[in-house]
Amino acid sequence: SQTIHQWPATLVQPVGSPLSLECTVEGTSNPNLYWYRQAAGRGLQLLFYSVGIGQISSEVPQNLSASRPQDRQFILSSKKLLLSDSGFYLCAWSVTPGTEAFFGQGTRLTVV
Amino acid sequence: GENVEQHPSTLSVQEGDSAVIKCTYSDSASNYFPWYKQELGKRPQLIIDIRSNVGEKKDQRIAVTLNKTAKHFSLHITETQPEDSAVYFCAASNGEYGNKLVFGAGTILRVKS
Image 1: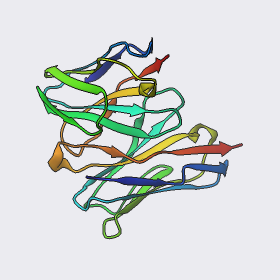
Image 2: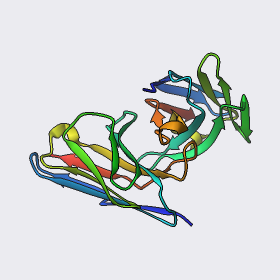
Image 3: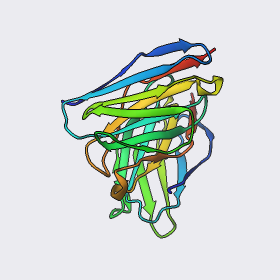
């Protein structure tokens, strides 16, 4: 069966520090991969999505970036975190267009 | 690109009553409309979905309706229970663009017992 792993579960980082969140999917090939951010009490904002290795689409201009070095690995990064980067970050995957998206457990990032 | 609007932002109902959450979308090419439930501190999980070739779908106490002409879809929960309390998100997707799932802002549902 397919599973999605996202880590770490919680992270406290100082302003200006770098960020790297990793997400991996097991049990499937060539998944569509997504990074969402959820600010406290708010909806799910799509940050990046990828339909294949090295193919990244950015939805919102910001100081975050994403990379997909392997088929089932999706990484969210920042060179210098801002206070406004705090939130709940969710990785998700889907098999094909128009099918259910499965979410990772999420990473609660607090920038201090 | 696609824009999904969701109403209301919060909804309180008495246990046993029905709850209705409505969403509108902007991209007429969208063809997949899932609903997710997110309990506090947990990941969103799919509860029901509907495709553009269907007008209504039911699963026990949950139903979703779709009006493609008006570009809106709704979630109906009947006989609500305290465990239905959560945040509910609607979403829309157009498969031609790699299944970019765009979510509504969410509805906080509180079921009072």
